[in-house]
Image (tube, rainbow, N blue to C red; front, side, top):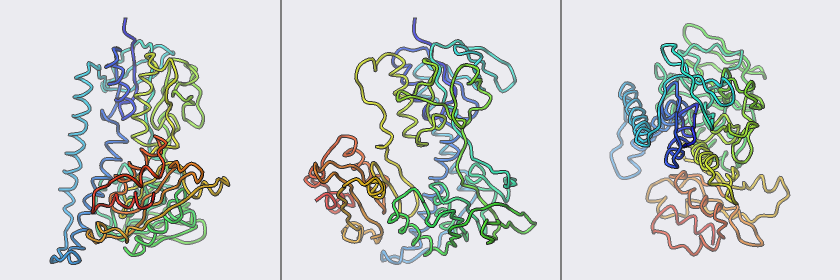
Length: 453
């Protein structure tokens, strides 16, 4: 008899676990209350990148004169942008749904809750319930924006990220609270659209978890765009009036604008799932899991944001695949576990930022000896052809063995280029392997071999 998989949450982790388990012969039921493909993925990640792409095109048109063209001032069609985003979401959801159905996965719309460790109660849109029996349970319910008590969210002037893809209207002056990955992407996209932007930065640099050199390049770009930076300030209150908002900071400064957007992290969707009653251990709302994503209950797994690991779609998908393989016995012998420290990530600002593996600052903080080589894109023929020499490639390696330990890239197409360093980090390649690779000329990727040389 095939094993019965019940998966709560159809985001990247859930749908990958579902298709993998189905291909391996399991009987799979997937429960999703919003969008198959994941609300966080389809309502956050994908729309933001679509908006960034539109803003990037507008920036390119403004720079047309430098490419020997007559400059054109593009005007944003807000309704056309809204329609474009909806079309992308619909196509992606349809693609995921079609793949699941082709694999024989049973899709149930509704919310799931553990009745006990082997039974899941599903409540549908009409309130009707059904209990599904499970040999394996996968929890992948994702997360939602964190909203502090002092923030009067109204979806009109005071927004979370879920209200901003796109917002009800184009802000004249947007105040972004939070300078992490999500916050800086919003600063980039709305400044490209023509909004005035103020960014409240709680530390002394944007992207406080990133390489200071990387953050400096982005800060220079923001200042060039006219973005106001409130450094060393924490928001602690928001006042809303008929004509705008005022964000009060703990140092006495007040940022005034037309709209405010909160980008201060997320919290896991773990309430109401019956987890603790079923024996699942939580820590701060996240499910405590081992290296196989297994919870304290041997046949209950957690993946994606709920697992408390890296909140990346790529990581969630890998977790989903690994869970299905482990639960169905493919990992009975030695196998490669997920190494979260080797996950590549990117920030889709202009210029793009991407990194993977060991960071230079972390290595020095640990007292670890590393070799760091850096090549600016200003030395790249392709970057000059593209009229965008901003940024650099930095590679971190072991001075004794030459093994690539990590790297960071700032510049055009950094999110694509980082894949080369990611493969090197995962496979244990040496800088010599990159230096001796014959890349295309002229290409931005040549900076990778130059940095490795």
